[in-house]
Length: 282
Image (cartoon, rainbow, N blue to C red; front, side, top):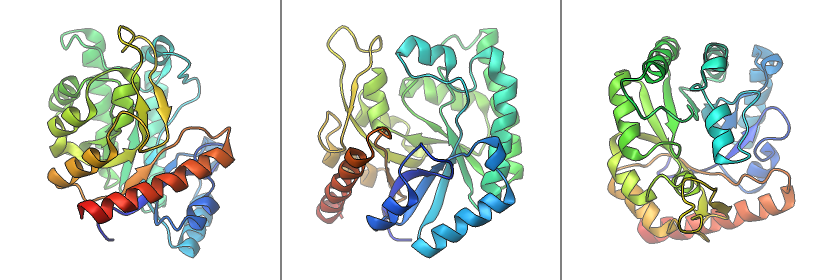
C-alpha cells in the first residue's frame, strides 16, 4: 500500500459512516468500519462484507467499537456514558469489545479501536486502577487474536494519555490520533499533542473543528467542520505526520450521517484537499 492512502468510515450496519458505495465512487482505497451490532458479528456477515470490499478494491484498516447507551449530547453526558470507563457498564462493554475483536479477526483486520472514555485523572484512585486492569484484560484478548488496540484521542490531554498507556504496560496499546477531538473537547493544541504522542500513533483521522468560545473550552463543545476549513491547519497536520514518520491511512471522518448529501460533498472536498497537500508535502 502506498504512503498515506485515503480512507473513510463505513459500516456493515446502516446508519453510521458513509455507504461503501460512496467510498467506491470517490475512489477511496481504505476504510475503518464501525463494528456491527451483535447479531451481525457473524462469519457470514464478515465474508459478505469482504467480498464487497474486494470488488471495490478496498481494504479494512480498523474496526471501531461503540456501545448502546453512549451519548455525545454534551461533554458531561459524554463523561458519564462513553467508552469502558463508566463503572456500571464496564464489564459488559469490555466483553462486547472482545467480541468485536473476534469479529475483526474474521475480517482479517489486525486493529481494533475505540473511545475508552474519560480516564480518571487521579492515578491513585480505585476507578483509575479499575480501568487500567480492565484495559489490560482486553489487550490480552486482543493480542491473542494477533491484534493491537488503538485509543482515539480527545478525551484526555496528551500527557494523561501517555500516563495511562505507561500504566497499562502492554505492547499492543497504541493511538488513533484525531486532531479535531482535541479541539472539540478542549484538551489541547492538536499539533503539540501529536508531537507528544508520536511514537504511539498507528492510525489517524482527518477531521476538523473550531474551538469553543474562550472560557468555554472543555465545558462546551467546539464545532466540527469539513476538513481543511477549521482550526486544525490541515497542511501543518500532514506536515507533522510526515515529520513523525507516519505513512499509514488518512481516514476522513465527517460525522453528519443525518445529512448524507452534505456528508458526501464534504468528504469529496476533503479528498481533494488531502490530495493537494500530499502532492505538496510529498
